[in-house]
Length: 56
Length: 150
Image (cartoon, rainbow over all chains, first blue to last red; front, side):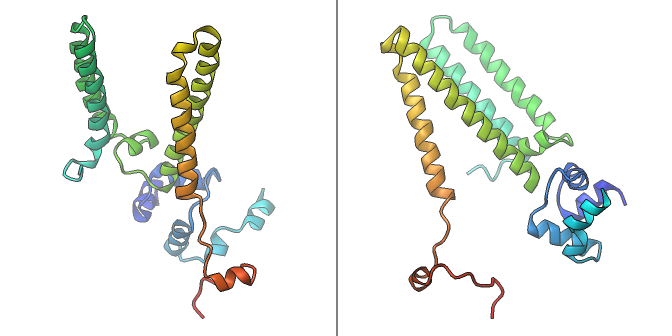
């Protein structure tokens, strides 16, 4: 799936998807829930700061 | 009022009209009214340019075309805040310089400072107040409750 397709599905811009991927922008709760729902995950699985820190 | 105008055209058009206002004021107030025609031509040209630019795939274009998402709106707010801060600083510096050089010319800077300060206070009162909740809860010390209905 391309960033543009994900952006269109979530109703945001491609630049916003890129910013979220790069960790430069934290999405709002509604958008966060939307992303989690889109990937069929829970929000805590999708945005787990501890997991991110462990991965870096 | 502007709902019948295409969203992509609204801001470019408003900015073009703003520049046309300057052209009209120049034509009325200045003997060199020919420059007003130049400003009017620039206003039309800039409106067309911004309309084309608003169709591109960038943050600036999204803001210009009134189709910004939540992050782009935040970027726009931060840019406006920076512009306000710079305007406030410029007004202050202008006031200090004119007070030192020629007091009679200082009032526009003082007025700008006053208006900017008032707008800041207005913003605080409009956007900054949380809802205190019922009186009984205030007396109880703002007990937190779950947003999920019980």
